[in-house]
Length: 363
Ligand code: SF4
Ligand code: SF4
Ligand code: FES
Image: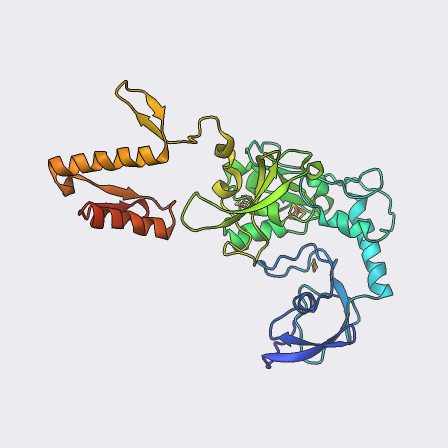
């Protein structure tokens, strides 16, 4: 597929008979999505280099004998592309049938639904996959994988390599890879180690990008797809970056955390291990939910915010009056927002007249 790069920055192509503007370097899928033309994809992720692995997005390109992958085919001036035809439909029905042949399917012959979205199932539901004889694929998981967060089901994997490419191209971690050959090909690690014995950072990005639910969170309820959940957008409070999260809430409890779609927010679909998995504190019984003041009896007692703030201010003032302003020191946190850190140094310098202000990210 060695295609020459077009010299023009912007040019016209024909998509299903309609003239469309394409920019240099854009693929057929890029232009089609902008134009509202649906081309199904599985191995495609806008954050990754195209791999052309799953063959779901094949389209007809005038002058090309074979169908070509729309996710990887770079547009050229005056190119003519057809995205829906009898030939393409037949190709997809056979392709889905081939995927089904070594896939775990339900009573209707559709890919089983897991706790995560199964895009292959959705595509199969929209057509009639050709029924092929089932074959046994001796794929193996990672038997020693005792990590607390990520589960891999090799029977639902279509080897699209989105997870391995994400781990390599986005996380730059290379913890997982395509391993073995032929029917035994699977997603594994060097030496088939469990993820905890690799460079894996447990970011969970491989789960998010997996299009079939072969990778799922261990923490989320297994029947999550059947549960009624509400999604609430929030800002992660583990550091000051401000990554956006979607909290999946069932019966007033957070049961799963995901990132908004790539391109939607500044974290571009990515989260770290804390943002994605460390949400137990929200409902933890030890969590402080109101201010506490240690009274003369040495015990902590609930107080109002007004009283607690007054109590703290009086304490600071007593120390300042007795020992001078530089006897006080203020330490701020990278978990706070920029505005909060700004206010902290204002409190230190303008209110208590000391430059003893520090922020943990400064070291
Ligand atoms: S959790 Fe993150 S680092 Fe670990 S294998 Fe998945 S993508 Fe790679
Ligand atoms: S685990 Fe998911 S993302 Fe990875 S290769 Fe299999 S289907 Fe693709
Ligand atoms: S989405 Fe194009 S080949 Fe997979």
